Image (cartoon, rainbow, N blue to C red; front, top):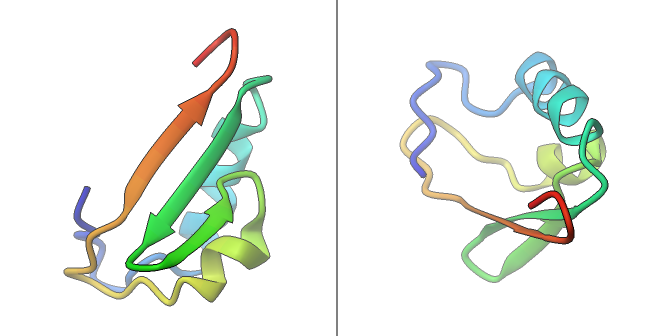
Length: 65
């Protein structure tokens, strides 16, 4: 998936993403290049430094994936 938001994956967008992922029991991970973080962690998502145009991969493992 490619980030299209003009401001990238900034704090507000990361918070919205985490609010959605926390509704699931499954483990959700987001990766960029060699970095892999929990999709349920705002700080982790911000550490990816995903600016507009960055490609990320989202994976989910679990019963409700």
